[in-house]
Image (tube, rainbow, N blue to C red; front, side, top):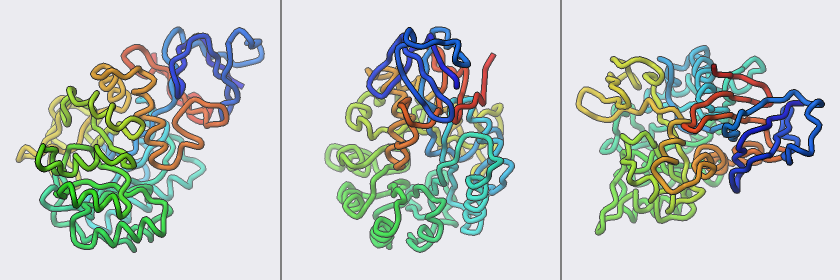
Length: 381
């Protein structure tokens, strides 16, 4: 049995000093450290740092030169091992609008890894299928030639591995698809890459949409006479919203406003592509070229093509640029996405009975240690 002491523990309802977190594979006890006989435990000294729940990235395409849509099991493994160093203990490998054959190949690769006993990296919760059921008018960095009419049967065929998928609620066949998937599965339905009016987006919500793919990006904007998909996402209390908090996709001045409006429905994501963790230079996304320069990834025509954000950086950016306390910013990358995905029984917070997915981070939220299922999987210098 292990025990973390001498840290500021970030719980669901606040930040607390002088607590000890006792765990094996699951969290056994959270109590006053003075009440424990530490000689009975393998002690981990947090040295005054933050003790946080592991992070959950529900939208990440690639990292370290690899891309989920390539459908290569070894590459996805390497991604999973890499993001552990960023404090991510659970994730949804995310596909692009590529050919249906490539999408299914990627689904198969993720399915195999999720069910593997030898899998060692951040735990796979299921696939995030971003497309191909989107609007070409808001395709962003998605390949237009692979956009398809919404197909509920395709989603239901893969409901064992698809955790959430994106659809433009205004396109032909979307309403029927949303209603069918909502009726027959637990798959989370997200609106994104959409040219919907406010009214069309609200109708999507009425049909079963409960999530929003990277709020503000690749959707109709908020205007005082035309609230658009952004207005619908912000005003619907049952709809959770992803936010790429890299300060480039969305201006940092909006972080606090969105956090106040959405509360526990705000989910930080990275939308990271294969250029993440790599030097500046030329890369691809869904077979299309992009150039990485600092925090920016752009296609030749200037279209934004994903990010190179790390989820622990997103937490820090939100914390630094809002009125949120750190524990609240952390929830946006842990408990909130876990709730959106229906995974919060075991994930998303430091709580007795939940999985021992824990990280230790400094005051810039750099990750110093990652514990996954009770095992130390990463330890920084």
